[in-house]
Structure formats: structure tokens, C-alpha cells
Length: 375
Figure 1 (spheres, one colour):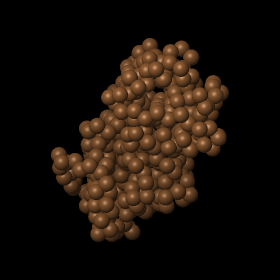
Figure 2 (cartoon, helix red, strand yellow; figure 1 turned 135 degrees about the horizontal axis):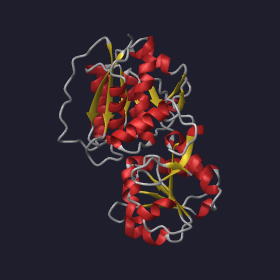
Figure 3 (cartoon, helix red, strand yellow; figure 1 turned 135 degrees about the vertical axis):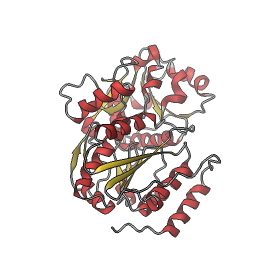
């Protein structure tokens, strides 16, 4: 099937990546499952423990929902969920293990990763389709023949947010805040590049979780717009101090449990997401409506990221109708469009970030037990 990665090269790459990250001493080997050659074997790598954000729990719920809804489908999708416990090194090791040892037909990565040249090389060596449900740079720019980005790219998200902010205030008066976590660094870099393209010098403030509230309290009372890079956990206390007249732009990676904790300040906070998951969006039908209703009943309001995880299995199942070999899956994925719960995805050999940015909207919190609404 044309999927014989160089084990020696892969091991060498993993050792290099592992040397750059903190090892997880409690990591235990993932059991190798019995492989069913007549099933589509898919492994999802999620952060279900550890400190890395966002939590993979909403994605796990979405994946299990899809699997339950399609239990009798053909080909049968055999889903395995692996906790990478917030460890960059374990993420790469499990990617290699599932591709080479467990011989998964495809892998879903739902954890925050630094998608640099080294990680892109690891994906290439895996020789199976790897679908990313969190934002990564356009994989095609790194020769990503096996990588597929289901979320908007950081650059696309930065453009959407800054386009909106520019209509409300002078961008140079805004504040860009980062806690320098993996997801925050990725978003900060994208914001800085987009601001530079608009000939704006960003006002960047970096904080740690312990100092964020105190450091930002005074700054937030004067800034008309604030961009919080990365998952909002670090910034929640500070965000509550925002006042009327200040708009807080949060991350695409928002967890609604965290956003709901903004309480009275929540009405001032918006974040980019799929307009298809907004309950107030007229005309929502098909996969989006089915996902929205079922997921809300099972786990509460869905996030855009959860919708992309749901779509990942749908994409792979649709592609497997032409054969379950990795090369066949890749060729089918990159040769058409797929209407999912979050957007209509389009991939090609030169376009590996498939989210239709026309389906992006700025969402806002409307209640702790209801889906978000498009602003």
C-alpha cells in the first residue's frame, strides 16, 4: 500500500523532538490493538489530562458521538482515542507508534502542537493521513503531503479578527496579550504578522498565569480592544475587569465552560468560530443541525473545535468509500469537497487547510447552557 516509513529515520526524528521537550515520566506504552483489515482504523490523539490547553474532552465527546451514530456504517470505522497527557514528546511518540506499529489507516491530532518543520517531517514519515482539528499553519507550505488542517489557519483567524476590530477602533490602540503557551505563541505570531502587513506596530504584553490579573488590570481599563492569544484560562480573572467600551477578542479555541465563567463581562467578549454552530444562524441544516442537536443533548453547547473533530471522522469515512489504504484515503481527501458540521472543506495537493473562511463569524456568549450566537 506504499506506506513503509523509515523506522530508523522516524526514531531519530522522535529523539530530536523529544530532546527539545520535557519528558512525561508517567507516560505508559499504549496497548497495540488487534487490527481489523476490513475496518477503517482511526486513532485520535487528544489531551485528556495534563496542563496543556485546550482540553480534548469536547473533541472526545464529538468523536464518540459520530462513532455511535455510524456504528453500522460501511466501511466500519474503528476508533481509538489516546491521551497524550499534554506532552509534546508523547504526542510525537504516539503519532509514530500508531502509524508504524499499530498501523492505523489515519490519525486525528486534536492537541495543540508546534507545527514546525520537525513536526511536519514526523507527519510525512508516518505515511498516513493526519488530520488536525486545531489551527495550524497551511501544511502545504511545509510540504505537507499527508497533513490536512480542518480548522482555519492562525493567519486566517487573525485576519477575520483584525478586520472586525479595525471597524471599531484604531488598531494601534489595541493590546495583544499572550501567556506564551503553545497555542498562544502560534496566535501571537499570526497577529503580529497581520498587523505588520497593515503597517501597525503591535502593543504586545506577555504574562504568566500567576501575574496575569494584576499585570493586566490597569491596562484593560484604557484599551478599547484587547486580543487574548491562546486559550483563555490564564486571562479569565483579568477579562472580568473589562468595562463598557472595551471589546475582548478571545481565541478560536475557547471552551464554553471557561467563557461562561466571564459572567457579566461575557457580553463584551467575542471570538472567531464556525457560524454553522451558532444557534441563531438561519438555514442551518444537514450535518450541522444533526450535530448541534445531538451534541448539545449529550454534552452541552458544542465548540467549533468539537465540530471539526466530528467532521474528521466524516471526512475519513467518506474518503474510505474508495478504499481504506492510506494512499487511497489521501488521494480522495485532496480531490474534492465535503460538507460537515463546521464548514464545507475543500482540499487539494496545494491546499491542505480546508476550512471555508466564509463560514467564519465572530461568536458571543449568550448563556451557560445554550450554543453561542453570531454577533
